[in-house]
Length: 168
Image 1 (cartoon, one colour):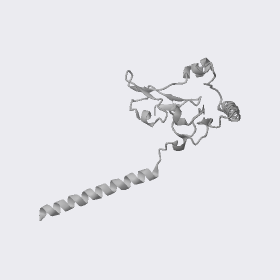
Image 2 (cartoon, one colour):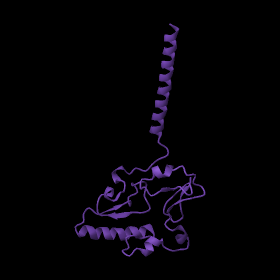
Image 3 (cartoon, rainbow, N blue to C red):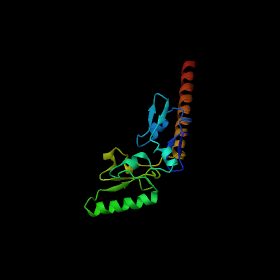
Image 4 (cartoon, rainbow, N blue to C red):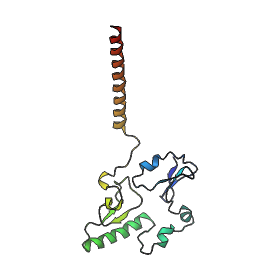
């Protein structure tokens, strides 16, 4: 497909491969992919892929005056976030959580957010329903197959009865 994970563990859309089908737009739980009518392809933030290749930080992380956006090795960021979360909890902000750190949220995001309220308050999907999409959904395929077989059988029975009625 057109969507790849780069050597920096970021998600990148290859414009030369994208055919503009827009399936990724409906599949993205975060709503960050948009369609460009000019190019007929989808686009999203590249996290300044060209800057990362040059050993630089993404522009948003470098320019953020409050250091709300931080980029770096995930283990380092986890340690920083854990310290900030512990400080918030000790200050009485018991609702503060790290959204996306747990690998059960969409299989691990490679990014996480320090939230002071429920994810839905920030326009993020609920962690309660955050199930990683799977390509091999055997129960779903079997259900669809069974439904198709029953529909064909029902059609054959109806067709046969109609022919019997016409013959009489």
